[in-house]
Image (cartoon, rainbow, N blue to C red; front, side, top):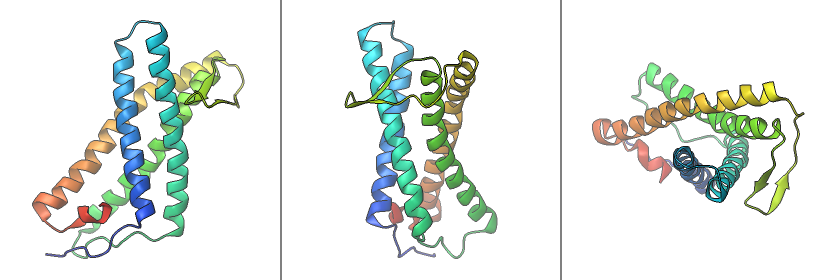
Length: 176
């Protein structure tokens, strides 16, 4: 067995888990929103969903900067090249989706002329023109992007569990 001795830095671990909780929360809120009729409750839940999404966006950019300036711990030496490639590709896709989903959500709302606040602390400026077609396109992209989120999270969690319970190589300890 090839046990992993090194870990991610505490800041990288913090980014990982904050983003993971944020993604789980935005998914739960989005699913809850689907069953709500228009009104105050729906507006409140949507506002929290958008705020958490923006927090995910900010945390992902910070995590990406940290990742580009700090080498992650090495993968197990006995990991096959295809598994290494899959791990790298999945991580790149996770970064991409945690940027793309908040951006498409924001653009779909802003292009429709609707306001976004960040946890009711301040109004997020609208940096896109009013454009119904753009709003519809990004709303559709955001809606279908959820399936990419589900697939990538399932792949990521599944790989972590595979390494923990099948390979027993200690890989999962790097993130705790």
